[in-house]
Image (cartoon, rainbow, N blue to C red; front, side, top):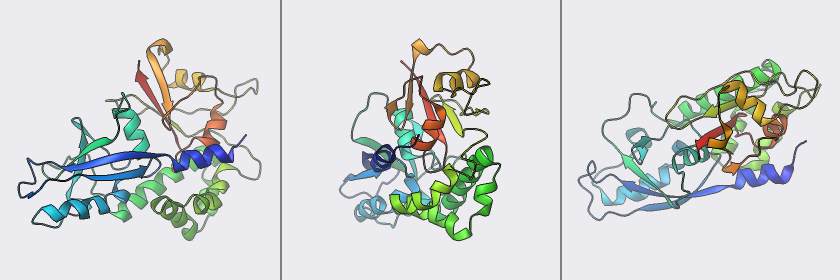
Length: 262
């Protein structure tokens, strides 16, 4: 049911990113330079941005902090609390690399929280708690210590696969090896995500597959017009959602499914 190599490869997936200051807003730039980095798909921009800003700040007459900027790609605001891989899959339909991202400092969007590390820790852990509420009625996460909660977040921030799974394995399996509902969210670019209750099995005890889960969220969908993507992978519609939960979930314990029009 679970596959170590797939989980490891998913964790180690990276996206080459080029950060550029918006020259309309950083008017004191002396010699514009880009910052290039390979960023983990499973991480979040606020956890990866400090080095980029330190480098870019060399060419401006001010220190730039993460809390003072926001990111934009092709006119789209990049949400701090969405995983980097999900954002790339949502907005870079043609697979262009490196992903060139604009760093902005003015007109901070109202819908973005200021991304301190403590704020990101809170947002991340709230998502993990919500996922466990769906899977185990919150019983597993509530039995964990504060140190274990922090280790989940810190292992993502520090890109430590083994540290993460030493704790996260408890959220994947309880004593009965059963879950109530599969934590899964469905995204279409430009629209709020959809989330409905998805059971891991059908009434006849056969495994629930991805096609059925999507139809429950989007009853009128025409699959011939969409590509279904998770973790940068075109996922077959006959894939078991419980297998996906244990192998393709992001660290927040949700499966994030992108539905992109073909």
